[in-house]
Figure 1 (cartoon, rainbow, N blue to C red):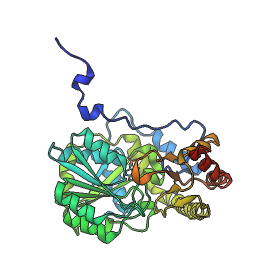
Figure 2: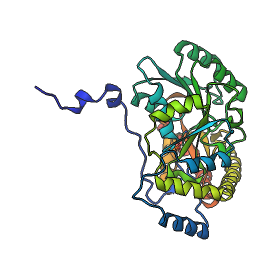
Figure 3: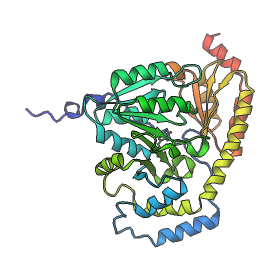
Figure 4: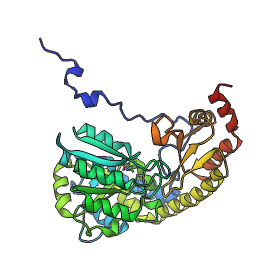
Length: 370
Ligand SMILES: *Cc1c(COP(=O)(O)O)cnc(C)c1O
């Protein structure tokens, strides 16, 4: 008797995970996914559309995306002697790296809480995932725990998001360096939020043979294009390139990204605005005693609802037409936390208004059942 039940064939670790869930924002103010909220000036949109009109969809794209890579090298100061690999979002780069090193005796290690795809992709490729808890007070690296975990598990790859998502902080650079030096395998510094942060490891490539830097254009205004890049020694990147599917960067993305980088000053202005908004939102939130507000070097701010229930506040914001990320259900360290993406001034004002009017004692009462 044959058994075609998928449960008989799909690997147990896949059966056991739930799919990455993206809520439908409808008409809500979207402050949940770290998108840049700004659009382009009209003339820029027109010039881009004219370019698309001349783009041939009947031909395969350049498999090496050479022209785009050259532009990326200049725009983001990738050192001359380092290679560049492009991915369909940095998510795909994580997948490429994992596929290239995978094995049942191999693991991926990252601080926890961290970016969820490290864990998910490890499972996709049949690797173990080791999450090492961050310091529960300020989300800094717990170095004793990191040293012990690296020694014990000998990870093939360590991912360090710099700044970290969902906590928003930059880890201590000296401690990151120690992890790079201690690690037996590759260390990927994931700089998805580089545009909003004061520090980077890009100019330290080459100092360590096992260091690569991963970035994305998603958070700086081009999330819809799906484009990430990995910069690092050719000895690593040449191997990863073998695992990359030939035409992973489609022709519309190649053309559009090159175009956008020609007007990088427009995107830079937008990220500057968001950094100013971040400072303003941070100050206003910090004035609310019911919230613990964590400093951020990214385009979002993590808050903990100290007094009351974050789930109720999340629902209240939803009723007011504002979608944020609810982390309150996470166990442990993110308990009662919400992640707020920084939006346009008027969007942030709408968010702040709800928070400032909110009666936190009410949810406190709710929790106590009184
Ligand atoms: C958003 C994010 C990514 C994924 O970016 P894409 O290029 O959109 O796939 C990777 N790492 C971190 C830490 C992120 O927050």
